[in-house]
Each structure stands twice: as structure tokens, then as C-alpha cells.
Length: 335
Ligand code: SF4
Image 1 (tube, rainbow, N blue to C red):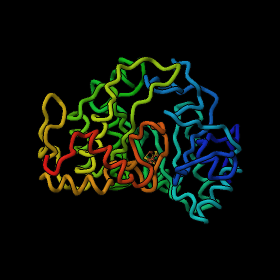
Image 2: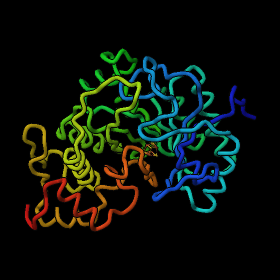
Image 3: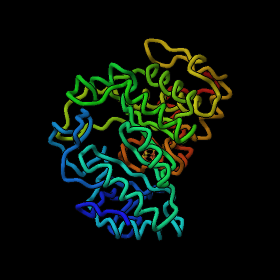
């Protein structure tokens, strides 16, 4: 018997509710993962600059990047999630957390409720916890644990979600949390989220991604989205920068090159370290530009608009690959 939370609600993304048949949503790319967030009407105790739910901000609690997370009946979402998994519509459940006093009880209640109804794989995105809690989460059925660094180096981390942001997080504690979680969950079972366009260089991002990859930790890339009610960040988001980080990440993830093989000039990629013919073959497959993260996570329109796609939720078309080549400035047969 588990103790019910004070309020039996869960936040679910609009796309997720569309797949579950709880909202009427027109979708050209339905989510393959159910995106959920534990419910609270309180603001998060942390104070990340980009986040709509930050302690000191005035953003909409329903917003995560471009996604709308609607408060919904927890039992009904869990019931329909079980059916959607059985029928193959949804392949994973992803739970985002918020820091507030009842967070642990509400999170474990949701995980247990999902597991009582189905065997859908569960990802949990959470700030660093202690080892006992990591073990409990693993025992409850979480197979992928994500600890979001969001920023690509310690200085940026402090500015975006640490001391300089009047927030509670520390770079070293987050890295340590990732290491401890990896020890308990195993290699390739722990990941992080990185938001591109918050002032990092491609060199910063790829150096970190390579280091984490060496430790068996995967990185999911997001494009920075400025939300109303959040503090301003001088963004360096542009599509060429994003594509460079995305392609470099793919090369590292597939063990085709490492950071040490790449050449940078003023922080930008001057050479990916693979022969020109291979680059053309790899670009053609389009794989590098699909959404990254946990298995079966496609996050449609999480940080994109119909006009500007950073992460493709499915296979990019030939036309889109042509556009990607232009964005990267790799159009000829030889680089
Ligand atoms: S990578 Fe996708 S499934 Fe994994 S925690 Fe992030 S949003 Fe969720």
C-alpha cells in the first residue's frame, strides 16, 4: 500500500495528452515518449534563469521550454498510459521533477502507480540525490536517470543555475551526482540535458560531452528558448552553432572521433576530425540531427517551431538534409 499524495494530479504535455486521448491535438509528429511532470502548485525552490518555474521568477508553471504541461488526473493518465504502451503508441514514460518539500513522496508515488499498471520503461529527470534514493528509484523500476547540467561549463553553470543566479546548485555537486548515479544505475543508464545557446562555445559543449561519454553518460541536446517571466540570458543560439554541436555530439556518441581529434578556432569547430567522404555519408543518413537522449525520446516541438527545427523527431527528409548541409556550411563533395 502506498501513501497517496495530497493532490492526485500529474502534469502531462499537450502532445502526451493527445496520444492518450485526453485532449484533441493536431500532431504531425506524435511523441513516442509520455512527457510528465510531478504536480505542485508551488514554484521550484531552485532558481535557474531559463526556467518558467524558477523560485524568483514569474513564469507560467505549465511551461517547460515550448511545451505546455497541463495538470491532469493522475489515475486516468496512468491508466491510459498502460493501454498506450500495450498498443505500442508510447514506448517510454519520462518524469520531470521540481524541487519542493513533498517532491520525493510525489515522485515515488507516480513511479509506483505507473509500475503497478504497466512495464513501460521509465526515465526520471532530477537534481542530485543521495545513493540510497538512487537505489530506491532503480528498485522501483526507473531504468534511465537524468541529472540535468543544462550549462556546458562551471562558470556558465554558476551564472545560469548556481550562485550567480541566486540558486542552490553547484557544478561539482551535479557532476558528483552523475558519477554516483552511474555507479548505481550503470553505464549508459545515466544521462544529462544540455541547453545550447546560453553563451557556451561549441568547444565547451563538445569537451564536456566527450568527457561524459568516456564515463558512460549520454547527453541530450536542447535549444535555448526564452520564456516570459524568466530572467534574460544573452543567447548565442543560431542554427550553425547548434548543428555543429549536434554533429560533433553524434561523432562522439558513435565513437567515430573524440574531442581530441577535433580542431577548433575561436571556440567553433574548424574540423570534425573525419575525412570529407565520411562526413558526406554521415550527413546523408540524417541520424545526427534527430532528437537525442533516452531511448525512444523524440520530444516533438519541445524547443522547435514549424519554421525552425533543431532536433528532428523522426528521419529528416532529403530536402531537410540539404538544408542542414547549408546550415553547417558543408555543401560540396569535399570539405
Ligand atoms: S532525454 Fe527525453 S526521456 Fe530522457 S529525461 Fe530527457 S526528455 Fe526525458
